[in-house]
Image 1 (cartoon, rainbow over the protein chains, first blue to last red):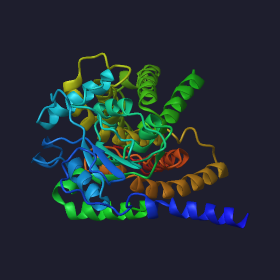
Image 2: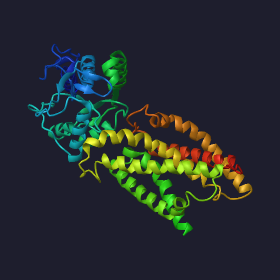
Image 3: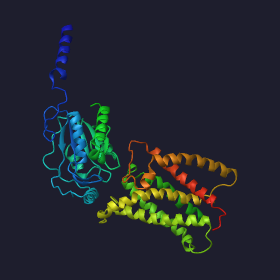
Amino acid sequence: MKRLILMLMALVLLCNPIVCGRASAQSIPEDLTDEQNSGNAKNIVVYFSRIGEQYNVGVIEKGNTAIVAEMIAEATGADLYEILPADDHYPMTYKELTDVALQEQREGARPAIEGELPDLSGYETVFVGAPVWWGDWPMIMYTFFEGTPLSGKTLVPFSTHAGSGLSGFDRTLAAAYPDCTVEKGLAVAGTDAQKNPDKAQISVDKWLEELGF
Amino acid sequence: MKAKRRIIDAGMVILLPALMAYSLVGEMFHEIAGTLMLLLFLLHHWMNRAWLQNLFRGRYTAQRIFQTMLNLLLLMIMIALPLSGILMSKHLFAFLPTVNLASVARAIHLPLANWGLVLMSLHAGTHLGAMLPKGRGRTALLTVLSAVSAYGIYAFIKRQIPAYMFLKLPFVFFDFSEPIIFFFLDYLAVIVLFATAGYGMMTLLRNNKH
């Protein structure tokens, strides 16, 4: 009896992921723009972002959300996946973009995403971020939510905004994924991400620390 | 007749905090409540059409000047608010081809909604005198209203209403994790603040012949 117990204990110890599983140390991806699963990362940052003329930042060459997404990925060693529209009809001027965004919202549009949706089954935590468009996720995010069923994962929303904050992203994400846990989200002012990145970085770091990353 | 008027007025007062809550109570509800508010406003105006008819008649005391200016401002706001709301509607009026006017509509709707909150409350206050009890009841009630108003000043600033009024904040912020009762209580306090201020203004201007 004692030997049986000892054997079982040995088995349990041997199967402990620290001993025989993959390394749990965060790996820093070599190429942040690599959309494929880079092998070791337990987490991934999925995001949608726009360049061109945006609110109060002029014409930008890197999206506000992209900046924050990359900050999160670098701090956590997560993979990055950028949601790109299959048909990039989004205007490069701010007002016209807001018009298109509202029209999509009115229609309940589901703009197609370019390429195949990523296989997220290997990830534990999925960060999901986007700009706030008319108080909600851009409609393409709903294409992503509806096309990417997830369960048992931890989801963490983040937004870039011009005053409306997280805008209920955590609620809508939870509604899209009732079988996942949604953690506290982060809202970063677009102008901060773009023009005051140090301030944004501090917010990101503090938030990740609170979440336990 | 008077009771009907009071019911319509009460309806508008109840709708106001609900409207200010916008996405906290749901955008569809906001559009329905806004449409209802417009209807109540039209009814209110109809029932008080004598005001408009007598606009150029009679003597203008200081009180009447204040009330009339307030009402004219409110009239403009109560046209601009539903109009701008309809232009950017996502539900009830989304069938209208108005998308390209929506961003201008938003820039109008947000500040005017907050100006409307303040001015509607002031307006209600200017008519409060007739509705308050006399004597000690009046003093007691005014004491309570003043206490609530003091909190209302705090709520007014905390909710950043001046920032919305003066276009410092272009997009409205809501904390979805806050129990909504606190939102309503704060906005009710703001309504009481400006209603009491309106009543106070009328008292100050009393017997002041133009």
